[in-house]
Length: 307
Image (cartoon, rainbow, N blue to C red; front, side, top):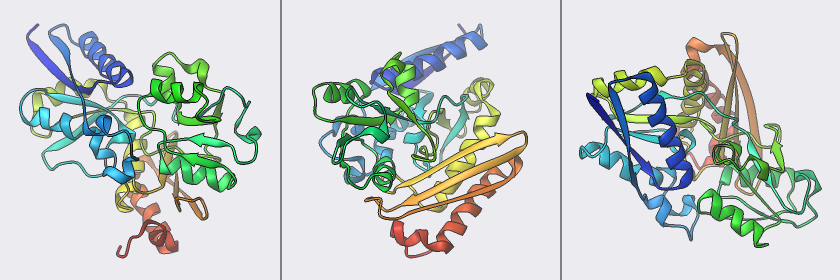
């Protein structure tokens, strides 16, 4: 092996699976490249007694990985794109994204056949304000509590009877070989996915052109255009885990169709809008949809006092 790419990753089973998937793909693409994992615990993994919104947002999952790259302990970091803030450090870049897996949210329950069959006042666990707001908009009677921890921890809490159901990303369950636990895939009409949900992204230094060139072969262009539109939408809205923001883009040939959502955390108000246009203008479409929603009053829901 003539070149080694060290991959900074969280230590959860899902994160290790995703990093391992990238490592395998790099080795398959190049006979002279090796890829090794550098597992580490992030602040987001350590603080489990509060929601992400209470402790600083989704950037807590990637900060230590970025430090490892800056200190020369790793060349790249592998992320779930839904965990990546809209704004990255100036010297860092999402170099490529892999083909998107199923972006839908998964309803998981041992007692109830689907979301619609939940009884009045049922107790539902989710770690996401985005999910909370949309579930409450559909069912204001539900009692929703934060459930943090890795996928296995959340399932254990469900199995112990702490919740009637939990909602989490279907892609994570599938990657861990747990798709059989999914009771129902929630349609985007019920729950618009998170920005970048189901997508694995590779982050590295912007000026590390050798590593960037090696990793570029893994990029999936259709997914890149969809994620760019979704992230441009969230960036214009100053989106983070502290804001109930959702966006989901799909492609029909060269036309991109983007759905955006902004909500009150208690589900009392939901704003949803759509935009379509050429994929070449994916980022512009995302920003334009955000501006249109801000002009329609989304800023008040997000606490934005300027545009």
